Image (cartoon, rainbow, N blue to C red; front, side, top):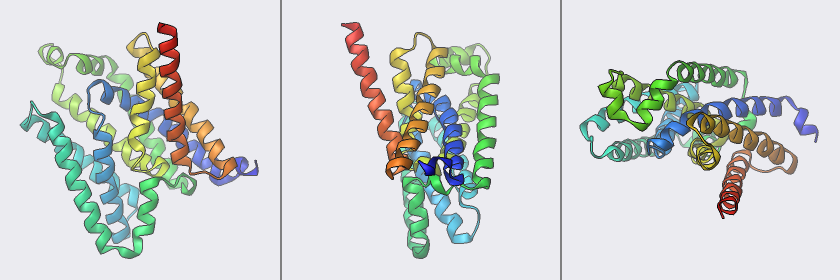
Length: 267
């Protein structure tokens, strides 16, 4: 139990709680717009940026963040070019991200162990700089969603109606994608690139089963994510488990219980 009072664990808990706010906030919009796979895509691109950061000696998360934001612009450009095939843009950018990551892995053999920690998460290694970055992204995401909540709601359910009503649809689409890039680039050190999409989608999947309104689904998704982060980190710390994997598996267990409870209630 001493681990729970250690400085590194307190930093991990703080970082986890912050991502537990931003990931489901963005995730609920992605899930409802059927863009869930964008999380995996931007995570792979971010890993390429992290690998380049280690190669060049630049703060890896900063380089990963730049890569993710550039990729988000590219995704929006491709979505416009292939309007009827929105998922194609995601597949193309993911392929590019994987290719770049493989290339940088080959060039930086000595840094591969460091990069691998970003694949599976290394929340216990969060430092003060990491927390400042995650905190800044959290503030930005919360402010943007608060200011544009009604517009994003309409865009999510009726994009054509949003366009007809005069809303800046292109700007809002880009804004959502860029915020997704910011969240993912800061979350990969916490849960890892291979698991980050779970934090975006599973809380939203749970909340959509039990919420009676869109606002409720947003609130419930954040609460579910925070519960998973706190319990998952405590369990991982006490029993020496992989924290990122523990959080994700706990989220899956919560989804299964929600499905069972929903089925029983409906019956």
